[in-house]
Length: 87
Image (cartoon, rainbow, N blue to C red):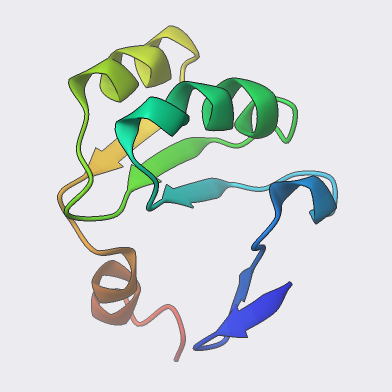
């Protein structure tokens, strides 16, 4: 567990506390299904966010199947900065 600009970051999803809201994925598409099904669903995550340049229509379909919010094409740190989340 680390902090990146005041945001709690879990390098290993196995060590998280209870539930998480967003899982930001930097990994290639081949790993997305496993991340969603093995980690996100048990953690009751609400959103999968693909960090640019990662993109995947397969992951979008999988997110929809599991009623997850799907975000792609936008850097999560930029979004947080624009929303003044850390201020």
